[in-house]
Image (tube, rainbow, N blue to C red; front, side, top):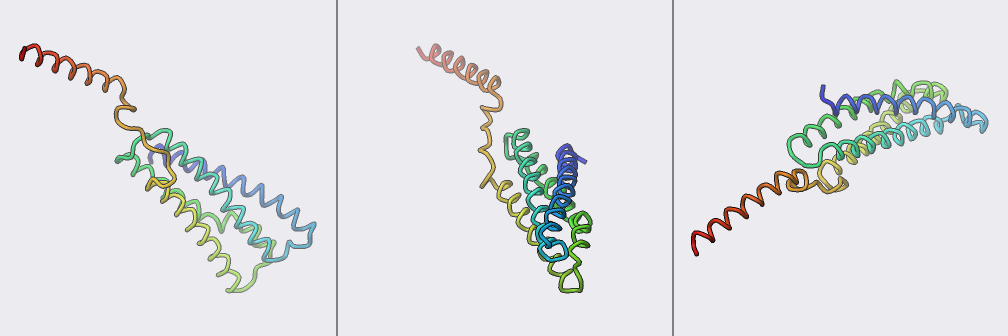
Length: 172
């Protein structure tokens, strides 16, 4: 497992813990409003999962962009690792949200299918966010080679300047 995958596993794990905490607060709020045994509880839980997952994904994308300031093989590998971890994280959604689903008293195939569809839509939205970043639409501009290697660039320019000077001396 790579560094990016390890970091993603940690950040998405923390996000799931925050989701559980947020859902408990939402349960209390819905209980007070008389909404606890309704589909509103399930929808709100899925929205919480998506929002917290999006925050975690944004953090991971920013951290990865800080570490990798170019768009080569390491970038592609890191983005692939993030996609793998995001997929695994979204597959955990039904298990993490199960207490909310039980409190919502979801019954029947229709309710289960609706929940699966909402989770699938949330997952697709997050993958689109990742793809837009990977492809450079929302990612920061990569640094050019000479910006990432200023000393090597300066030495190359110095050598080229010396060669040009020597060539001029030979011509004169």
